[in-house]
Amino acid sequence: MLDVRNLQKIYTGRNRNVEALRNLTFHIGAGELVCMVGPSGCGKTTLLKCMAGLLTPTTGEVSLDGRPVAGPPPGMAVVFQEYGRSLFAWMNVRDNVALPLRRKKLGKARERELVDHALEVVGLSDAHEAYPWQLSGGMQQRVAIARAVAYEPKVLLMDEPFAAVDAQTRAELEDLIRKLWRELGVTVLFVTHDIDEAVYLGQRTLILSKSPTVVQEDLTIDLPDERDQLHTRSSPRFAELRAHVYEQIQRAKHHNGDTEAPPDDSSHGLVLQHTES
Ligand SMILES: Nc1ncnc2c1ncn2[C@@H]1O[C@H](COP(=O)(O)OP(=O)(O)OP(=O)(O)O)[C@@H](O)[C@H]1O
Image (tube, rainbow, N blue to C red; front, side, top):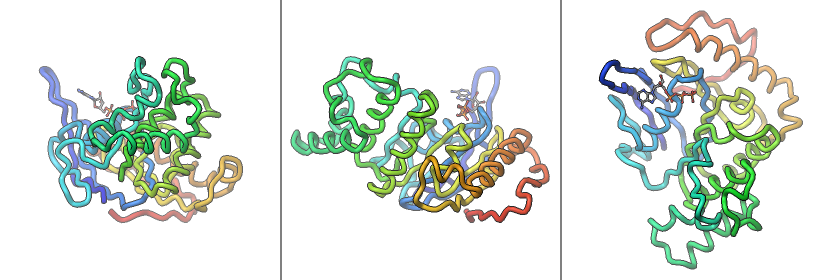
């Protein structure tokens, strides 16, 4: 489905070059929900932009269903952290959600159907005539998610989409993403700073090293498929996985593509599964 092979990105400037990504290789299968965490500034946004065809890698390749990504591929949608900047203040909710569909030239009736469905699944049917500035932060992020859903993507890339919302809204939006993933069968790569979120949401967690960045660990999240905020987060396995990811991130702060990984003493007898790439 989605393959990242030996991806390197060097930003070249007049006075200095920044090697944001060193050598990233991983695979995401169709219908998977994969989370990605790493130290601040390790290149998560750079990676997502390369995957979305918004930035050209220096070397290496991203491919979707075997085809190299050389520009924004059809069938891929991206949700960014800054919902305030991705919604147009002068357009109501319905028009904001419908905007990317204009390119598809589907006809008015089909467009209306997709927008209505997307607003319904994110719980915003009643707010379709409101303007973004009349909505809370959590509602605005729901509009951004509805816009991605209406587009009917095969792949959804999410770049810290809940970083700016409060904890309660965040928990609701996490459950919304799991619901959409299960109902729509979409493939999701979800970038987050939040260790609990990285464990709660996905089937796998990719842990990145600091910059120049490599994949430090590809961890299988072996929590039951049925998850809820109360029981899953208070389960012993959740606590074990959370502690492991936390320790790996501490380790990642000292490890990058230039250094040998420091000894890994973080599993403390835990049984962990890793995904081969
Ligand atoms: N346009 C740019 N020009 C030069 N350097 C850049 C540019 N964009 C990002 N960088 C550098 O690349 C590195 C990775 O940045 P990036 O924003 O991808 O990291 P991130 O993991 O998403 O950060 P954060 O965790 O803070 O959101 C950083 O050192 C950053 O300064």
